[in-house]
Length: 274
Image (cartoon, rainbow, N blue to C red; front, side, top):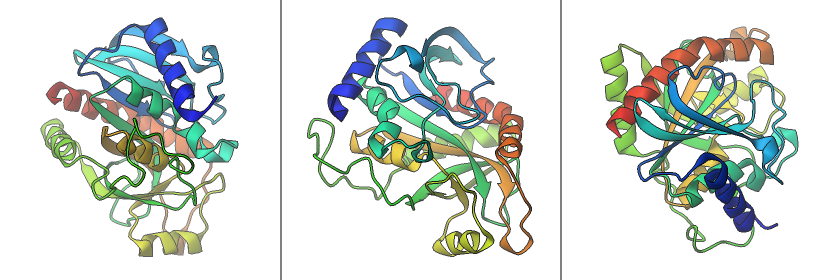
C-alpha cells in the first residue's frame, strides 16, 4: 500500500474505533518516557497500534504504541502514544505515518514532544525547551518520492516550521504556571548510538541547543500538509563535550518521566487557549 492510501486507511480506522474527530481537535505525539503520565486526560478511548494492520510495530523503550482519543482540560485531543524511529529500521514515510493520518483527519494543530539531550550549556537537565527551529541531520526526508498534491506542494516552505502564535501561547502558559521554558534549535540524528564528544561539539557549532532521534521528520510531514506545529522537548541530560558523562536509555527515560508532569501541565494550559 502506498503512503497516501496507507495514511488514509489508518485515519479511517481511528475514526471507526475511536469516534469522529471533532473540529478543533489538537494532535499530540508523546515521546520517550512521556506516554505513561496521562492522569490529566478524561473520556479516554484507546486503539493499540497492534490492532491497525500494516502500522509499524513500536519497539523502542518508553514507547507503548497506541492512539488515544480523549479530552485534556476540556479540549478534544488525539494522541499518538509512542512513535517509531529510523533506528528501528523504518523508512521516513513509516516514521511519519501517524502524523500523516492525523493530517488526513483534519486536526487544527499538532504538538510534537520528545526527550532530548541539552547541547546548550546554559540549559539544565530536567527542564523544558520550546522548539524555535530544527536541523535535519538524518540524511533523509518523508517527502522523498512522488509528491501527493492533495497533501501539499512538491517544495513546501520551511521558513516557519514551528507556529509563532502557538509558541507565544506556550511561553505565556509557562509564565502563568511558573515553569522555566527554554527556547532553542533542535537537531535530529538517526541514532541509535548516542553522540561522541566531537559530534556534540560539532552540532553545537551548527547552532543546535538540543539533540534527539525523532520529531523533525514528523514536523516536515505535518507542515507539508499545512498543519500548525509546536515542538516541546524534555531535556533529560546535558551533553558537555569537555566533561561528558556516560548515559544510557534507562537514565534518559527516567529523566523524561520526572519532567512529564510539568510538560503535560504546560500542554493542558496551552490547549485551553487553543
